[in-house]
Length: 387
Ligand SMILES: Nc1ncnc2c1ncn2[C@@H]1O[C@H](COP(=O)(O)OP(=O)(O)O)[C@@H](O)[C@H]1O
Ligand SMILES: [Mg+2]
Image (cartoon, rainbow, N blue to C red):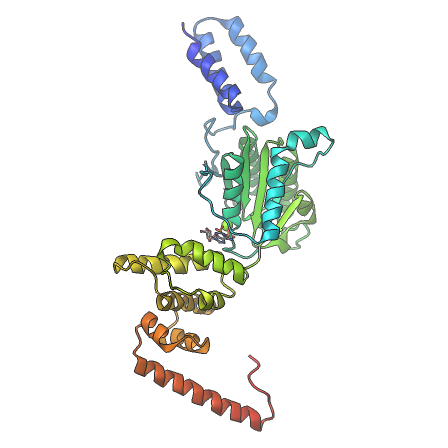
């Protein structure tokens, strides 16, 4: 009987730090030896396997080597990917960029730090409003470290049977500890809700305790990055587990400029000024800016145009700004916003398809309306609109 294929796979697993693979093939080898009547050799290997740290014991039910699933919904508890190093482009302001570089250096030099007596593994919590690039940053970190990214959406770990939630967490953390990786806990607040939240059941509080214990038991090669839009819901004990806490705000003007430029790429006409677009995107997340720009590019490509015009860009951004406040805005509302922002009529006309006559009329109505309002305010002694 030839055992070489198993031995080679075990060796390969060991050389690539893929304990999962090594253990899996060692089990196969035990089975083969048993079948061949080589009971003593099989027992020797089995004894070695029995002394494995618990983190390497295969997950009950799930196929070893595959991402574990929630037994109720049959959905995977995590998603695993290898992010190409040149793919995620994350634009951050200087202070955050420095923090990320410090984090990466900490991870890469963990051995030296550990030898110097520093025992806190680098762990990062990213928080901020939706669409500011938290997920993108986690992808960037995994790509920079050259590690697989294991993303778990924490809300999907929560089972309607709370006992299963604790199990799901254990399966996930067991899986994540099998080889070096970045474990990205997205929508982290779903799991890490404040333990003293009066509405929560005692059971869910136990889930949080379990989560913390699982986190503490992870090997240093499992790099934990978590993200949340609701940092105020996090338990102080959870905060303490993270020595890097990055708050990402909605992008300031310089970053909005960089985002617009980066998303437009070669579709930015050489004479396209982004000054008004930067002003108009105030309050929009990078995600919404990206959507707006990509819509414009789609429009340009389908119309066989080589570049995105300022009118199209501003109209699409105005649409985003207004739909963030309410449902689908009308063309009149979009035009009104652009007029308020003193965008030249010809640019508005090009973007919205409105005629100059309509725009002049709408502009005039607006000015006379403003004047009347100004007068009315003057009579009541108010110094202008406060809204
Ligand atoms: N600062 C940023 N740099 C690069 N891309 C960004 C940035 N902010 C948002 N994006 C883009 O917007 C989209 C949504 O970002 P995402 O990371 O999913 O946001 P979040 O996780 O904070 O909700 C992604 O396609 C991402 O590329
Ligand atoms: Mg996200």
